[in-house]
Length: 368
Image (cartoon, helix red, strand yellow):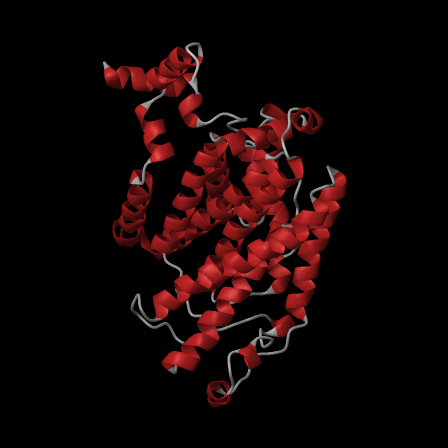
């Protein structure tokens, strides 16, 4: 290390908030995430009632899905509109494992309590869904991420529609449980409900699992954004040609971001399936992908806190206008139009909450 760079690094370390250092380098944030998820599940959920618990689950899943899309659309500056396809892959993979696995090993299709039984199977299903979705991310990303702009959007749109159609043409579920027990898991791989949807999925999704995975995604997104790989993605977003000229492997960086995004989209699909209790391919098509894009754009493309705010607003806002059922969607659409006119860069733009002057003034007052 040269003498010129050493004082510079010392000054940067001196003025870097300790919280950011802790988030970037220690295991403490993951322990905090675990405790926060447990608190929300055991304290907040019972205190707010069933209706708002359902809304809170929707908010957490939206944060997970939109946060994963933000890595591709926000950090790398690409335009993917097929995110629901990865969600569909993860949801079907996890639902297949928990539904048929519960019957095969536990003799029932209902929920089975216990971390080493039903919930453990559900956790493995979430990982399976994320891994399969990331495999599809590689398959789609390697050839398509050499494209840019509208061409990439068309490819991702096509992928999402292919997944939707494949979900609709699968065979129906066997109706007799005894028949299922006698058949191997591999023989049941195509029995996913067909056009009627995969139903009777055991409802394992809880506030704990949703906010645990959402918190892990936010922590990893933070670390990615402020790492050298994240800076490479931001350089690609600003000017891909200039990034290539500076030696950034743009295709590799975009594929890695795409795979990361697909993995958490698959987990989000698994959580969605086990919350609703059914998977309907028609519900996870183009419009679902557009909903996620809207959350990212409204919150601010590339902003972690923007995604959290955008997901919270766009999930809660329709519930607020539910009393005006005839005009609810009109008011919702007008609110989006007003935000885009007055704040086209999104609520947070490209900044984070801790980078704003208001946050710095609040921290300064606390220190005093």
